[in-house]
Image (cartoon, rainbow, N blue to C red; front, top):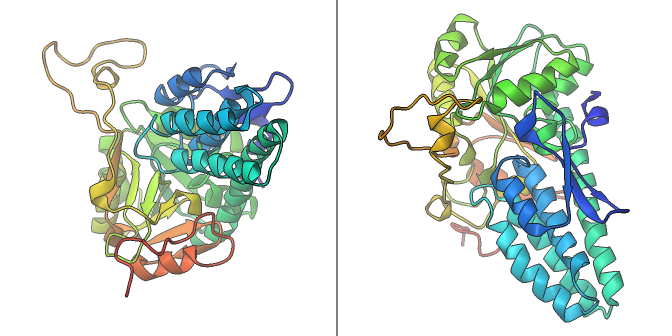
Length: 375
């Protein structure tokens, strides 16, 4: 389908050195540098510094990080569990908005509890934790391929697609999420082109998505964020494709609310005005059935990201304040469809997403305590 998965392995576990290895996203497109560590605090620094980023990859990092903590622990089940809980929870808090990070941590904590409950030896508990993390990555890669198959029929010859940030291999493993339908359609002979926004202030669209699509041979052009509305109209854009860091999924009217990289909400408003479809692609592990809008904290990042350009040139006058939210919130009424590995759902999401989560193959299940559940 795509050669991306063969030349980019964004994160992995090294069985020989017993450490996590990752491709440093902050250095692309200038250098492809792999970094490794068996230190949890170094991993947290990498996540907060966006060396490792993107919701599904953060899920893998949460799993591998918690498994690494277990593996680094003494051969005592009590100590393994204690470390996995305490240090795993610290890891889960590294970035608050994306739901997958905590999901990956909890998956490993659950496996550790289960193995200890079965009376497994400490070495076997550690091995089970690492195996679970590897399986999460395998499932993520498989999910991206399935998202591609589910979403490719939404892309047609002659389409002009707009995308934001990077929800490709670097962020999601495999063939990505928002890029997966593009890659699947392209492999089937469908011909289209892509406009990717800069996605200031860290330019993940310009640096990362353009880098990936260029390697695939898919025509891509970079536009600045403030060109989007004009060019969507003038270039006759047919669809916006975005990934997601969290999608609310319960029985309330908030179901289908999408948290994604800052700029997504603006694109959705432009799309609505211009009659352009707004598609979101994400695995079911990104769906959060437990929380409401009031519960979700949007990460505020350092002012320096806005104050200076890459290369260190200061563009904000000294003494002027900066606001730098990493994500925004797109209401469900602006989302045409959500493409997952097990199906495509449409508005009203208060019924379609719960039904999806209750179906076979979902990575998460709807809790009976989910907010707004029908009585």
